[in-house]
Length: 209
Ligand code: SF4
Image 1 (cartoon, rainbow, N blue to C red):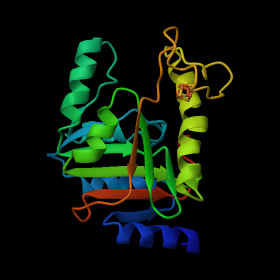
Image 2: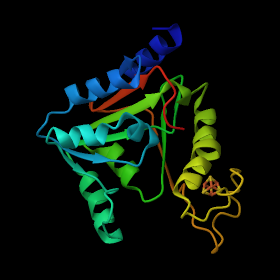
Image 3: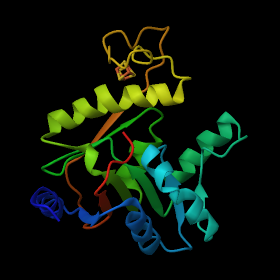
């Protein structure tokens, strides 16, 4: 494990956050399947990282109840209800938009289910590829807003945001009525009161964006 990663995991330790390092996403999948009991209910957030790991399918196949708001064919109201249930599940599984070298975790959310789940679910697992590490908190917020959110807007395409076409954040016009802002809520986790409630699985490869 290189020094930067070792330092990051130590920094999380000081913040009551339990960090693990996995060399690749297959190791990370095994780690998640070991941490979460098969009887647990699970809430999830939309995440390319989780999609790349195919972790939701694997959890469902072994019997976990996943409140999956992305099931095809469900109504908008059912999708919102699954988000509410997910934010009160036994576990919440998500990825970070960015992580500072000092250990601060940055999350953006549109609907707020992600910020709710991460803030208060009894057990939270955050998966994070090494591509999301930034030198400091300011850069982490910048990365989440100016890099990750425009790519998410492109991915979801139905969010008419100023950044949709060219990937440039124009937050000064994003509240105009013709737009639908995506990055409505920002959550910065600096530390935890309950030791190990929040676990971060840092993966030694690029995952998500
Ligand atoms: S504030 Fe608006 S333009 Fe900027 S990243 Fe968020 S959604 Fe895009």
